[in-house]
Image 1: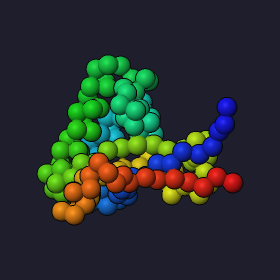
Image 2: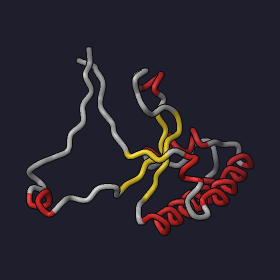
Image 3: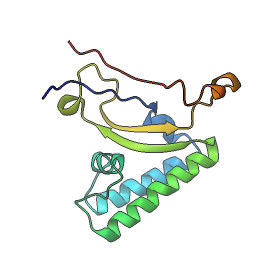
Length: 135
């Protein structure tokens, strides 16, 4: 069976810039305090939430509480920007390439682009694709 690289792309906001939006810095601090209390971290959260899963190392109730903090951050971001933010995690050493622009916890933004009126006419005919070169 052949193997190779698959491509991924996202519109990334660095965490420092994220924390400068609205009240996100305060909300983020409260979330980190809770994460310390239940003995988990952003890496575990990013890994699980990237696949829409709960964190396996904390209880169901703790997962529910953590998701509450996360949703508050998402709602504040949307209120301030009109966009949606998500957390993810990528280990370029184990699952990627030394050339990856993303490594570790990352925050990605959805809703950055709108089709132009001309592009809207071609929706479903033209698709945005990504690729990597292997070799």
